[in-house]
Amino acid sequence: MGSSYTRRMRHLMSLFLRSKRVRQLGMEHEDPSEEAEAGALAHALLDIEESTHRIYDELLPQITRGQPRGKTIEKCLFDIAEELRHVMYHIRDPLFFRHVRDE
Image (cartoon, rainbow, N blue to C red; front, side, top):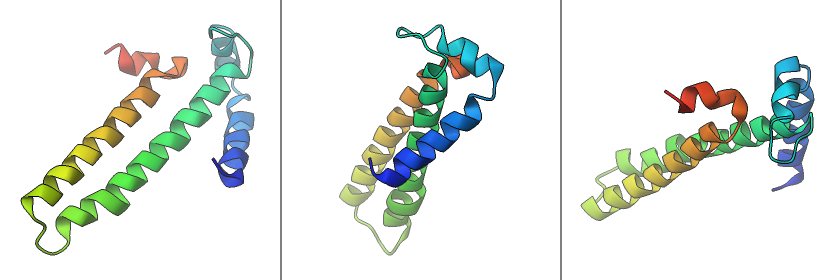
């Protein structure tokens, strides 16, 4: 993770810490602190952003450009599934999103 990622993470955390609910949820973490949930949320959202960019900017164009072979399409679909698995992990990780994962 580069310095840009770290800078964005810190910025998001500072914004999320303005929320009383985020700070309270931080105290429910395995290693409780007011910053824990802000960090989990920032990390989750930045990684979800990265995965969605990979799907829409890299993988889908490989399928939609030209005349891809069946194997290329299958590999891209597998890679998309792995990115979606990564997104699902980051939806389940922050406590703030637990209402989504519990549906």
